Image (cartoon, rainbow, N blue to C red):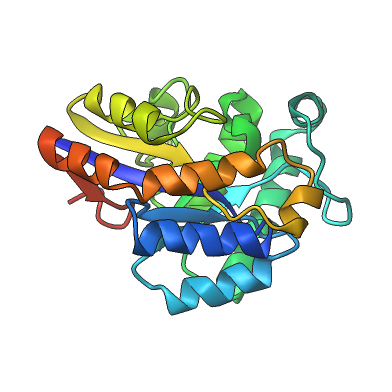
Length: 239
């Protein structure tokens, strides 16, 4: 059996991103999203999440100080991860999860912005926070044994690195046709490219709208049906 969780990252980045994620859920194949607790449009994302309970919500953990604007480049995040202890990172991640919970959202899963959990100290911090708050699922790291040894769950496969910045209906359908048996998480970045997004410190701008178009396309829906791929979520992923 091939089961697929389609997770939209960056929920809370801008209002246009938020609305695009919900649109990709209501009209397309997105089943989950991860909230950025410190982002500018977090409150708007929470409103949409509450109004859309079928969208499985998690937390998109970010390595940045609480009083600092979101930086753009991967090297900044790597440098910060390398100079921070797992305890310091855990404290920051815990504050982010607490903010989501205080907003009335019970997160089912965790992942990290820029995939910093691929670094061992960040992975340890994420696992500790997941255990502390009773969150069962985390995004798959390089070594799945890290998750199992922490008593957590992770999908069997992860898809999305090569599609980031390149997703369209054709490339997405091709990736889905290559899906392996088991549970796969597909990372995506849908959104509407409004003025706030154009000003935001992210390299994905107009591309987010192309992601949205792909995720809501009839061709991709047809591909899921033809390949016998079942859409699911983290909440339902253990079933």
